[in-house]
Structure formats: C-alpha cells, structure tokens
Image (cartoon, rainbow over all chains, first blue to last red; front, side):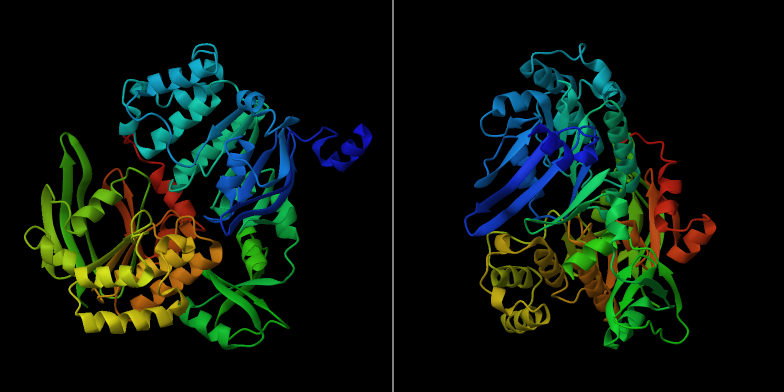
Length: 304
Length: 246
C-alpha cells in the first residue's frame, strides 16, 4: 500500500501529499459550487488555485479549513480527515479568509494576542515566525484594527494566521484589490514562508500570479480545468499564438474577427493575441510576431 | 476639443494629512483615461472630489462642464459611476435596477422602458429581465452595472476597479464595452490594478503620495521610463512612494 502511494505521488519527492482531496462536491441549493474536485499538494509547495470570482475557490478552501462540509468526497490535511479530525487539523493550519475577519474594535496587538491565546501560545514565543510581516505594522500596534488601511489589515490578518506556527497556510484571495507593488511584496513574504517549510494554498483571480506558484490548478465553475506547473501549463498551449498590433487595436480586432481563418482574437495589453485555424494571414501594415502563451492565454483557451 | 474634466491644483486635506496634493489635469471628450496609483496614493479621494461628493480644500475646475466647487449637484446628475463594491442592488430584479437608476437620473418612464429593452437586447440578457441581480454571475453583473451607469448617456463615466475578480474573457468583453462607449463619445475615467488594462487607455496618470507623477499615453510613458510594459512603469514610480499607507 505504502509503495503504491509513493509511486502515485512520486512528484513530491516520494513523500505522501500533505493535502489530499478526492472528488469533493458541494451544492448550494441548485447551484453546484464544486463538481468533483480532486488534487493533492506536496509538503512545502506553493499551490495556487487560480480562477475568477464564483469559481468555487472559497468553498473549497473552507472545506479544507474544516469550516464547511462537502456533500460528497473526502479530504485530508497531513493525513487527518477534514470531518473526523477537524479539531486536530485546526491546530496545524492557518487560514486567512478573503474578507477581513479580525476584531475591528480590538487593537492590532490585542487581535494578535487573542489568536495566540486561543492556540495556547504567546506573541513572544512565536515572534520569529511573524517577525518579517509584523514588524511592518508593529509601530501601529495600539491602533484599532478597524482603522487600519487595507494593506495593513492584510498584514495583521496574515500575522494572526501564522501566530501558532501552522504547517499549512490557506490564503483566500490575499491580493484581491491590492496594487501591483504591494502584491509583489506579499508574494515575497510567501516565498520566505515557503523557505521555512510551510505548505501554502493560495487562491487568486490574478492570472499573472500563477507564475509565482510551484503548481497551479485553473478552476472555473466548480471544476478544475487543469493542474500543472506554470511552465507545464503554458508549454501545453495547443496553438501558434501571435501578438498583433496596429495604431487602432480595437478596429483591428473587429476586422480580424470577420476573418473566418481567425480562430480567436482578443485584446492583451498593448497588442491583440490571435490564433488562426489554418495558416496565419495578417492585414496589411500591422505589426505581428509569434509569442509564447501566458497562463492567462491558456485559461482563455480552456474557456473558449 | 472639449475637455470633460479640467481641474487645477486640486487638493484635499484631512487634518494635517494631505491626501490629494495639488493635482492638475484635463481629460478630453471621448477619451479613455486610466487613473492609476498604489493603494493609499489618493485615487479614491480624488475621484470623490471629481464626482462632487467631497469638497476640495484647495483648487478648482470643471467636470462635465460644471464647476466642482459650486455645481456639485449638477455634476452628480451628469456623470455615471460604477465601482466593484457598489453598483447594483442585489435584492432587486434586473428590470427594477434599471428602473431605479433611470428614475434617479431623471429619465422619463417611456425613455426608461425603451432603454431597458434596448439594453437587455444589446447584452443578450432578455431572459434575465426578471432575475434577481444577486443570482447573476459576477461578469454579467459588471456588464449590467456598466450599462446602467451610462443609461442616461452621461458625458463621462467613472469606473472604480470595474474588473476585479472577473474571469479573463469577461474582463475583455467588459473592455470592449468601454471601447464601444468611448466610440459613442462617452468619456471613460477608469481605475484598475491590472496593468495590461492600463495599455488599453488613451492616456494614463499615475498617482504617488497624493500627486500625479506621470501623465501621458502608455507608449510615451514606456519610452520615457525605458520600460517594456506599463507594469514596469508602475513599479518604477510607485516604489518611490514615501508615504506610509495609513
């Protein structure tokens, strides 16, 4: 049995997966939020769940955080069952929900002390784990959490999720609504946490963050479209993709869409990204060159 | 060319804190204007002044042809506004939302009826006439919200992070609606954290610590900052921020 499992998960350096989901399904009335989700995550991985709002990311993370029961399927965290062993799981995971969920009337320090106390520890005991993040908000430790800016709330929430030294961190859309510079800083923090051996599950609607994960699952309408390394996903893009531009890209887009040889054409930053059914044909006077697909191109292709 | 926004030295102070620090710029009719900046740079405060919701501490100017100091009620009636956080009433049906916003903007019943049909047809939403907005997928909500925000054909529409969390195809469809509105002469003033969307704007301003540190077309900005993408330009500028987010 052991050997079989090892070969199945050989990608994780012959370790058993620390997170394992089998056929998780969940419906809210007639709405199927999750339709048979299966994946596993190795220890120390940064695993990204990439998809738009309403894809099922929050439901999935709430099941793994033992806050929600699936209708069917099973899941385990470090070998512990999310239903039977929920109390044990809660001691080894840190969960940062998408919505700010700290106590707005408590100060920064009081919030952190509260979470430390619940887990039977103290800020001092685990200060090393949170130091890099917490030192940025420590000058404001007497301020009410409700009066913090968005970026500082996020850092406090992450500190609270880390205060009991969890082995697995679940971050639900930590960078939504965050500007590009602060997003980069946040991902730098995640890399540091990974280097301390923490396994990180993170969801995001920003496709460009996929490249910062070890592996990603693209998720849409409760189903996983694909799971791979970011490089694996982009390498599997099935078409030749061209960046095409002119002085008026919107006009060019409408022109290209009339051409039956054009399989898909859409705006993408300063150019249009275009695939052809047959041989590529470009209108007169446009700039074009063949490019490698990004994760966002792959996502669009899967939805197409 | 008429300017739909023309402001000079616009400033907002809260106590000792200068949230917006003497910004001056114009936006031309039919332009797609990207208003970028890091969290806490002062974008929201600036937009509130432009929309007539917040009185400037200093400076003056016009929006949609009305004076921002004295005619803010007229400004509110002649602009459209949509944000990711608030755009439609979730507990109202699709047609009820259209009816409500049409009424708020002073459209006549007959006009509202005509525009409702036209809008639902254009969006391919005829079947959702009676649906509660809360049950619509996010991408649909955002498209509907945008259509409702320009129902009264305002001179300018303010879009505050309209595409956050939307899937990549819907995000592009949303931008095609923006292009279409701009081609009809509606000026679009948009904020976003997606730097690829900055490339879709005719001109872009980047706020740092309450000031506008750069304002030009994406092409010119990329040349000036020797950057390949607007993302690079943004990082170069926003990293200079000294103001602690607070």
